[in-house]
Length: 82
Image (tube, rainbow, N blue to C red; front, side, top):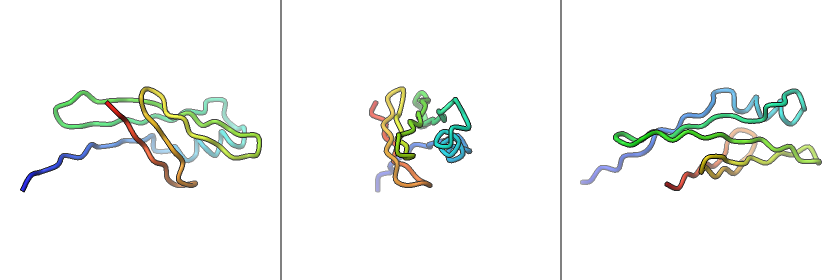
């Protein structure tokens, strides 16, 4: 049986608060950090920008090679293609 090693994904612990503050105009810095670790490979760090829309909604935009899609108020999809 072969073993598949999965990456460890780390996200800024208060990322949901960053989104709430960005949407309510309480913060000018609308980014939170993300990092990906795989044993034996260099780590990859990036950011997610929270972009407020005119209708009060928001969009997440990955930086540094990450792609991000919101899945609701408590989750998002993260992808990194090396």
